[in-house]
Amino acid sequence: MNTASVSTQQASVSERVKAAAAALALGMVLIYTVGFAASASVHNAAHDTRHAIAFPCH
Amino acid sequence: MINRVLAVSLLAGLLAGLVVAALQHVTTTPLILKAETYEAALRAVAPSYAAFTEQGFSGEAKIVLAHGGDAHGEHDAWAPQDGFQRTLFTSLVTIATAIGFAALLLGGMIAANDTIDERRALTWAACGFLAFGLVPAIGLAPELPGAAAAALESRQLWWIFTALVTAGAIFVFLRMEAPWLRALAVLAILVPHVIGAPHPAAPESKVPAEVAAHFAALSLAVQAALWLITGFAVGRLWPWFIRRADAR
Image (cartoon, rainbow over all chains, first blue to last red):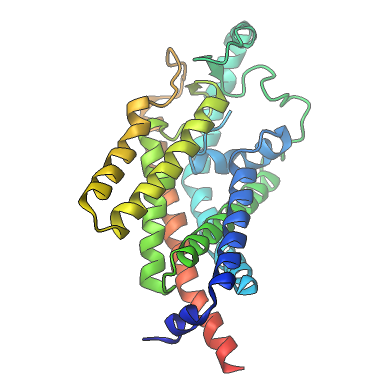
């Protein structure tokens, strides 16, 4: 068993819940902004990436 | 632990984003620019068509010409200038996307109480590509500018619904023992496709089919690269941060 698994299992449940919630919130806010936000400026800045990553665009 | 989540998300996203931004620059972006020339030609020929479709705002099966008319008020809004500025913003947005995917990956793995190492992170990343890339693409194929498409909101809703259902179903299938649960997971993956993605009544694009097909394949490859490089970076960086913390 490597260090990673020991440390992960040592983390308390509440600490894991907080870390997972923070990570998921950060991820969802970022993906919403780059891929889905309706703002025209955001759309124009993100345009080529939205097409390349196949987020629904236009 | 939250600090480590933020640090690993940012670093892994930065690394993966930079690599994929370079990939985009030589694969998908040239095709997007090429498609825009056809789109501009189409708009010059039929300016009244876009205006016509603007009026039929029923929400259902409305044909929207990409970049057509003032759908997004794009004429007034800021847009990066073609060339360096556009490349810069595309790269920044790709890095932000990679950071977002890295954070979702970490969030999922921590919530599932998985050990975060290279092999497991790569497995999660492959599943991420299936759920957020390949399976939604079955209904909404990667599109070049100029392609006809149904109303944006309905496509976005379908995409988010499909991605979440697929992600949940893959997790249930891989982690649950009960055969009925696993069968349910397979059925759940099919549901969005039985409902069907919103599609336009008629195709409109003047971009040659060969170019569009090439773009669809490249887009899927770029997405796979984005997920796998992000997963690899997360799987390498997380244990490294732990070893560093333990060494103190």
